[in-house]
Length: 127
Image (tube, rainbow, N blue to C red):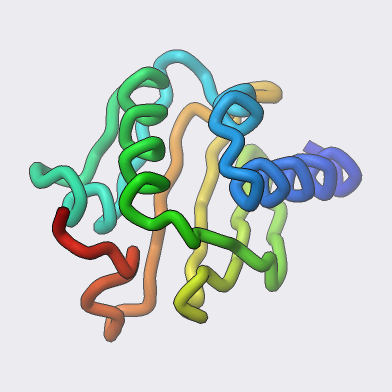
């Protein structure tokens, strides 16, 4: 991935999130994607690992349902060999890093990472 491709990916990623457009967002992910996040464990229980594109979509749909004011502001992005880190501020003002690993143009593995002192990173409330 070159810098221009990374910039376009980040722009599309944040635009899709802020529009709550799951179809556009899911276009970036492989069918066999895995995604790990403490928010996934918080919202869904279990080990916090989402396996497969359909499960990831369901997880993010639930997150959007529980956090209707979800909004991200990109602070920076960092390009690796087959990886991209997106540093952003969420709707609560918390800093988050999303670490994404690619196979060609699609994300095959992702990690949501949060500041260790944030005990409720999603800002979710129990429904």
